[in-house]
Length: 354
Image 1 (cartoon, rainbow, N blue to C red):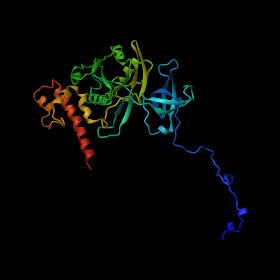
Image 2 (cartoon, helix red, strand yellow):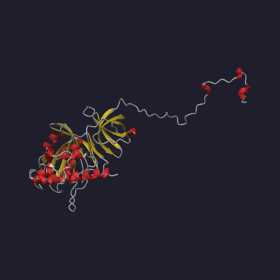
Image 3 (cartoon, rainbow, N blue to C red):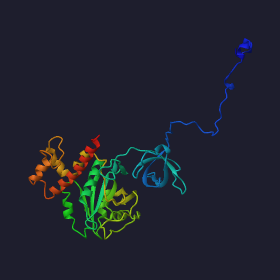
Image 4 (cartoon, one colour):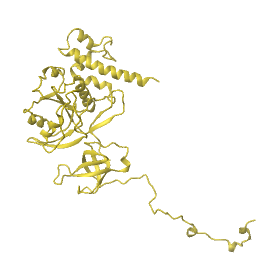
């Protein structure tokens, strides 16, 4: 029998909500919620560069109050890559004054993504730049020697990203680039040549107007020199080629977006660090043939499912090679294509192995 049984009906205790003891919140903070603020007042800014977790953004692009500001990423974006060229939603102090820090709370949908991997077997992609619509490939006619296969890789990465490729050959005063350029016959590729004291900045600049163009190239080919000529305020570091190894020294250590202003209008130059390799582990192998537009046309006569490798039965490319119908550099171009296809074929077979 409990003490309640000894009570008369009139003595029965009454309870109300005031009798409920509420445990105090010692930290006096709000309860956690998964709902995030809508940030309806966020401004759209262009990411110009990234440095140790801080982002330089351009507020009010093309407006009267266009100015740079420094920003950090919001906590909810900690797993979202933010790269040069991104269109970011920014809140907080966007004045750009010294000591201020805005906050990136979202990324607008990207129109393109240029990616690369450490090597062809690495499927972990590294985003180089976002929202570019052109790629300017810079190679030297000599010192260092031009690498046809590296250019092929740039072309594949550009087409895979839906980016229009352009080509600049520098240092043509040191060597004739005719033989090198013959490797790209049959490709819809705009080519510029540049020599010491004769840099075609007006012609190249005209191709940049109205576009966001990412500059890529091997270290030491003169890419930063070209960027400085097109954007005098860029002040990108330039280097030299090692006389022993024949390799260029990395001078640009980060990717940065720079405003180009020419007689015909404005555009964006995105300078990237020089690289000696460009992995394509992220690329769809079906897009490789598209980079070789002349060979792609011949391959239309291949049987369904053709691998285009040297031992592929009834391959129209191999038949055209045997019949000498691929042009003077056709054998080299087909060899370059087949090497890439073989690499991706090995990767596909390895990934399918239990």
